[in-house]
Each structure stands twice: as C-alpha cells, then as structure tokens.
Image 1 (cartoon, rainbow, N blue to C red):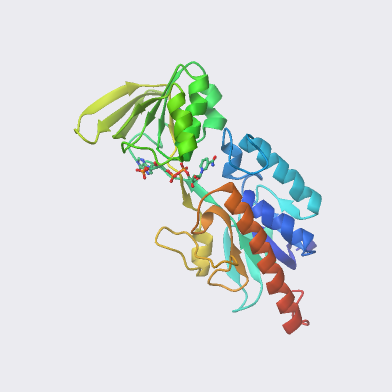
Image 2 (tube, rainbow, N blue to C red):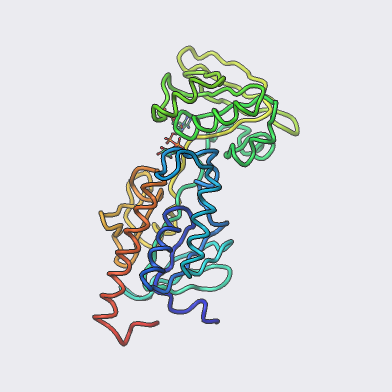
Length: 320
Ligand code: NAP
C-alpha cells in the first residue's frame, strides 16, 4: 500500500461547500488533510441556476461558486481525490484510527469530517424511474437547455422548485409548477421571483404517473381537493422535492441521527462518536450554503483541537 493511504490527520468525506470549507480550514491549520468525493467537487450548489443569498455575491451561478471554492481548496495544499466513493467506515478500537474503504484502497484518518450532503428526494410514482433521463430530471441547470422552447413541469414548492421554475420559464415555451399545497414553502424573495415570471402554477396537485413512449410525453395529475384526475402533455418534468441526508455510512458506524436520518451534532459539529465530525446538509440544521460553510469551518477547528489532544496524550501511538 502506498503512502497515500497512510496516516492522514483529517479525512473529509464529501466535496460540497461544507467539505470544501473543512478542507480549506484543516489544511491551513497545518493538518495533513485529504478530501474524498464520490463524483467531482461542487456538491448540490453546483447544480443551482442562481444563488442570491451567499454573502459577497448579489447573484452567482452555483457552478461558478463551486468552481471558486474548488480553486481555493486546491491552493491550500489539501489533497483531493474525486471519483472516489467511500464504501465503508470502520474504526480500529474505541478511539483508534478511522478506516475508510474506497476502490483505490483504505484511507486511514485520525479524524473524519463527514459532509456528504443529501441525495435527491423522489416522488416514487409509476414511470418516475423508467423516464429518468428520458424526460424526468432532478437538475434544471444540467438538463434545462435540452428543453428549450418545449413544455415542462416542475414539481415542488420549496426554494429549489422556485428558482428552477423561474429559470426554466426563460428557456421554455411553457413552465408549469405543480405543488401539493396552496402556498409555496420557498422564501418570500423566491416566491416573488416566481410570481413575476410567466410560470403557471397548479396548486393542490400531486403527480400520479409519468407516461410516454421512448420519451416522457404525459404527466397524470390529481387535484387533491377534488380528487379529479387530469393529464398534461409535456416534454420534460423536473422533480424538485429537496434532499434526504446521505448518512448511511455514518449510521453504520453507530452515529446518532434524528428520525429523518440527519446526523445530530453539537455547536462544535461533534457527533456521538469522538473524532467524527459532521457538517452541511447531512446534519440536522438549516440547508443553506452559508450554513454549510460555517459548519465546515467549525468542524475543522474541532478536528484540530481533537488531534492536538491526541498528540498530547499519546504522542507515541500518534502517527498510525
Ligand atoms: P424543501 O424546502 O424541503 O422543499 C421541498 C418541497 O417539495 C416542499 O414544497 C414539499 O412540499 C415538496 N415535497 C416534498 N415531498 C413531496 C412529495 N412526495 N410530493 C409532492 N411534493 C413534495 O427543499 P428545497 O426546495 O430543495 O430546499 C432545500 C433546502 O435548500 C432549503 O433549506 C432551501 O432553503 C435550500 N435552497 C436554497 C436555495 C437558495 O438559493 N438559497 C436554493 C435551493 C434550495 P410541502 O411544502 O408541502 O412540504
């Protein structure tokens, strides 16, 4: 096994805003730091058409903000391994090193900062998985341009659905927002953006089924107030229902979570397992880039204190 896999002080899992900030801070503290990311650096922010509430930028595309963060991580000297999915995390004894298994080999860390974010929530209705990639999408920034001058639906009522429907309405012939309630959950500024746009809103409707041939061409809706079924002809449907935490690896290690699977942390981003810190959308907190960035900085600071304490109490055992 090569040096790469041995004796890292901090292993950051996940390369969204929380993980990238943690890597920046940990590396600047002088900790030997590696960041493992299953895809490419960026996280969910990279798929946002536009961000208007991250301080310093009145408006910035998610991809541009992610790219700036990525450049900064690389400048700090933290090692980054993309396309490196962590398959399991175990620990050598009660307070020993963490072992993170990947296809490249096993990475060993004194501390882990877990910042895996969330995965797309699904509707779980007939046709959804069948038409994914053939009309059903979970990312307007990625797939929106495929539907230029076509008809699309956006499903959801939060910030993601609001920002994605407003963005799509600029590209498409018609964008319809389908929401199960009669008011949006999105923050007021985002609601105003939708109401100013040509987006048509179908209140109190849910999706019953996605239908089509090779490609999606019809979505069956139900009005939940009347029970009436209707059919809408569309070329695309964007499912924008928020995310569910990617916490399975941590749960398998024995980390405490709430009933939704979000990791429980204290104000120092400390979890129920010493040496294992968590940050960003995977923890029980507000899902915002500004919050994730704060978590990442605190988690790195806590990891620094933890590691210095390890060195002080067990200098011979330290070093792997
Ligand atoms: P969210 O706030 O959790 O909203 C999810 C929406 O999907 C809700 O309106 C919910 O309906 C609906 N929904 C969930 N499951 C559904 C189902 N099975 N069938 C029908 N509808 C369903 O998620 P989000 O909009 O992705 O936002 C997630 C977090 O990211 C939020 O904290 C948000 O502020 C943040 N975000 C921020 C920005 C930004 O630029 N600042 C952009 C995007 C996201 P109900 O309302 O009825 O529950």
